[in-house]
Image (cartoon, rainbow, N blue to C red):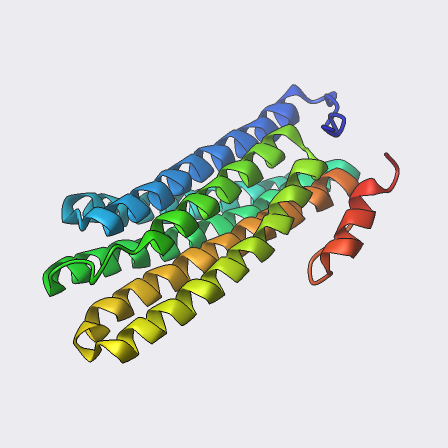
Length: 240
């Protein structure tokens, strides 16, 4: 269930505008990162160096957005001295843009691995793990951003729970690829690129979970970082 709108209008229309602006710009940054993740996975599967270069260019946009939005958050904190839910909103956005920037870094690593893999002659075999985990992680990123836009703690909890599935898939894929390298040492260089790409995708899933935690903090006022899923679920269910 979507949580109620926590941010009532203020007497100052300018303050409302400032809060709306940082929310909009954060979601814009999220859209750029979401595209990076999708394009990086596609570039890796097809060894499309042109698309991989596009992902890398996107990282500069993400970095600039992080700096700009963070500065806006700092100005709001200094000038407006927000309290209660407004303070949670500004703090949540400040934390989320940091996770988004790191997602962009990891997507760039996948793109760089795609370029190196192309130079090595392409995939050593059909690596469905990359496509599967890439799609799974992309769904987490999309849903985490949607949960923020809706201030939906239930959706955020679902994203956090998905991170465990991604971790399990990552572990299975790693074991399979290590076995494959041992069976055919000629593939080591290529398979290593697959392993690095998978590691970056798994980390993107971790950051999507972090965003979900920030959404729960925004919606419920509960800091659920470093807690297990059961404790997180209890925080979401409280005061429904």
